[in-house]
Image (cartoon, rainbow, N blue to C red):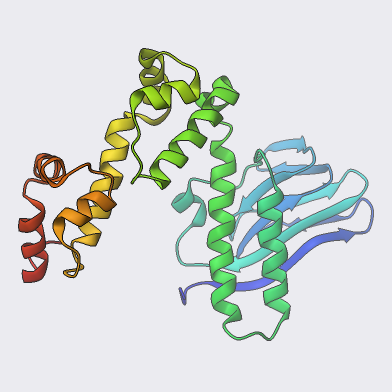
Length: 266
């Protein structure tokens, strides 16, 4: 566990009295992550605004907090301390309102954190920290879903993302350009154009990287012959495996294995 982290208080789906106001001119002295489930009138610096449902904000410890429910007041939130600014670490805006694409995973993290906070379970503090990291990652990912590429290309991007995940999860299978093009109902040139646009690489490049990473991992197991490792990683024969391995890794599989045994390979 990161001992610099401490959860001070946490509530899931909490309702306050109608039109309730929170006013902390000097902040709360800790980080506050808010998921606002009802519209709020907020003052942020010199800016006044009314938020919509499912607005979020991550307050830093000394930043003024001033928000009031338009009518109903309902939110999920957590107060915590940590050594490193989580907004900077995960690319999440601080002291400004933002709207994740979907708040379900975020809210679920807060619900689980509350359960851990009020429980007397073993390793509760460690689980709270793990859930904080999960919450920050979920928030960052939901914000990225709103980027220009994903919004502009919509369903096509999601189809490519799904196919790429399937291909890289089943790297040992024989994947051909014809197969991928057929699955996407695109010409080969279109397949490569969109794949590079979305992921900044090619299907062959991504597949080769995953296969070689797996091969290097399997080479640490001296019970497996190098030829068998090539087959397990999707290479048709040892000659092809060795040729690709040397091209991308700068040595043969056997040389790599010897370097591992001698402790020379990082």
